[in-house]
Amino acid sequence: MLKVADLRVIASSKNDVNMKQYLNCLGILTLRDREIQGIKNLVANFTDPTINLRYFYIGYRVPKISREFDLLIFSQQYDVINIELKSNINYAKEKIKKQLINNKYYLSTIARSVKSVTYNSDLNTFYTLTDKNELIKVSITDVNAMLVAFNSVDIGDLDNLFKPE
Image (cartoon, rainbow, N blue to C red; front, side):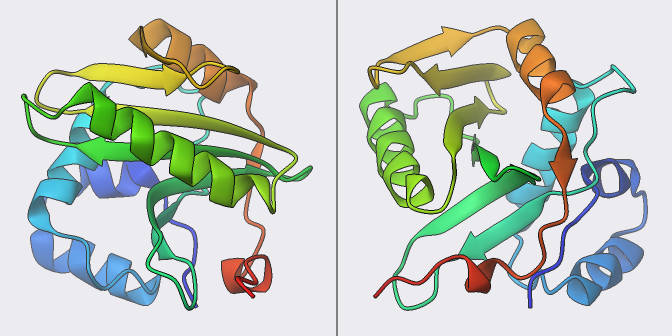
């Protein structure tokens, strides 16, 4: 079972062995070095200490289908924020849009509301979908405000929420 992670613990870790042990204890077994660096770069944008980064599901895969989410957080009311990590300066915006729309579709089956964000760590840039599924660039301030207002919690085993059949 995948457990929630504290992104600040990952970002502040100076010892790769200790961080890998922390991730293994949480059931996070396939996080690559560039994804870890992406998380560190992402967290560097969240300087407001009121932003709760303790309850993130990292690299969750929906059972029986190949859908994977880089970062997910849930509220008690089953609102969800999905953050996808990219690290290519030339990553196509159409691909970002398509992935966020697909993720929104899957998450809307279990969530009351879905906010979708992509973070490109090479550009230190954020993108999100509008209500009409248009991809727009947003500021770090906008993402900070979204996270400050979001009351994330540990909702337990995500496999209990996703029933692909």
